[in-house]
Image (cartoon, rainbow, N blue to C red; front, side, top):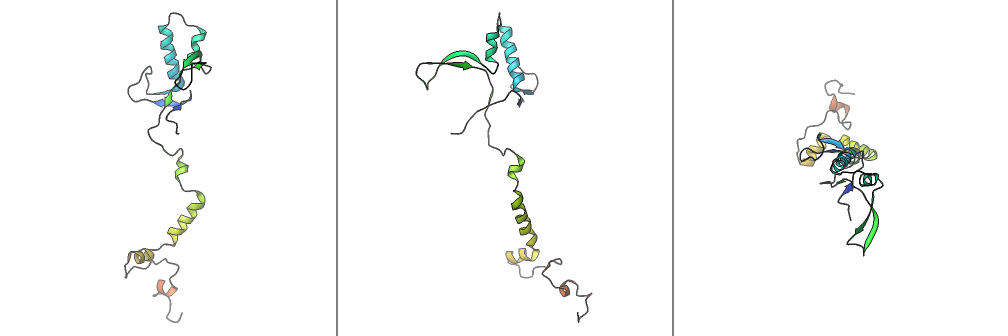
Length: 151
């Protein structure tokens, strides 16, 4: 089953054109957003303790949760993180979409061997022009005016 959401790393960067909350800039790191969220929570609380930091750090805040998938309460930790859901799959690197090196030579040879005559012949033209640089042509065909008749 493919993952619909990916947790974002603290150093990953978001660009949010419109509908931003807490962030004045359109581009910001995940950690900057979580810090801004912690600051808002801090301003709302009368007393801020070290325990409350757990919501925003890697360790998390101690808690118990009653989940649908388990029977009864389960002890653990909870922490605030951002998730990202991609709209479509794209190649991860440009190099992945390029042909591999060993195939590139084969493709070049395929196109190099193909002449205009081959294309016209394949398309059904009978009076196809001959490529003057075609290595299959004789010297007489290439240089009729230069070479003597008894060459």
